[in-house]
Length: 258
Image (cartoon, rainbow, N blue to C red):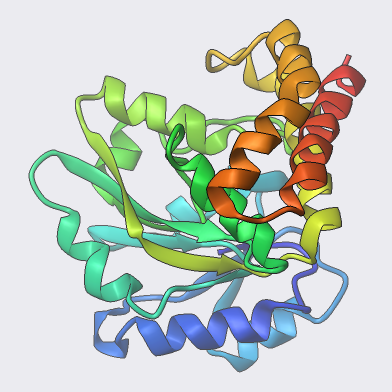
C-alpha cells in the first residue's frame, strides 16, 4: 500500500484487509509512506504493517519501492482509502492462471448513491483498471521493468501498466462482480479527482493514447444531453447536474495543465 496522510480512512481499510485475506496466505504486510505528517505510520504499526519510506515521490515511486520489498511469487496492492470487498479473496486470486498476470476488482464511491449508480452505468462503455485492489504475478511485473517512472502528479500509472502487460503477451483481468468501496466525501471529492485526472493529461499522453482536448470539450458541452440518457437509465435525477460537473472538472484540469 502507498500512503500519504491517510489517517482518516486507514484504520478501516487495514482492518478490512486483515479480515479478508487469511493470515496463513500473507508473507509480508508493508506500507510505502510518502512523507505523511499525520498518524499514518503509527496506525500502520498498530495493525502490524511495516512502514517503508518512499524512495521517490507519488504513485510510481511508491509502487517501485514496494516492488523492491516483494519476495513472493505474487503480491497485492491496495489504496489507503479503499474498503476491500469481503469476497475479494474468494474471487480474485483464483483467476491468476494461464497467461493472466494481473487481476483486479472494481471500486465505487457509494455515497451519495447516485454517484455509485453513475459509475455502474458507465461500465457499459468502459471497464477501468486500477492499482487499488489488485493482485500481481511478480515475475511479470519485474519482466516489464516494474511500474512506469512517471511524475508524482500523473494518474496514468495503471493505464501504462496495462499497455506494458499486454505488449509482453500477458492479460490483465478485471472482475466486475467484485465491488470495493472508495471512501471519498461525495461529489466534491469526485470533482477534485476528475480535476486531477485533467491536470495529468499532458503527462499521460506521452505514455498512452488519450482523447484530444477537442473531444474533451465536445463531451463537456454534450454532457447535459448525455446526462438525460443516464438519468433515465439509472432513475437518479441528481445525475442531471452531477455528470456535467464531473466533465467540467476534468476539462478545467486539462486546460489548466497547459
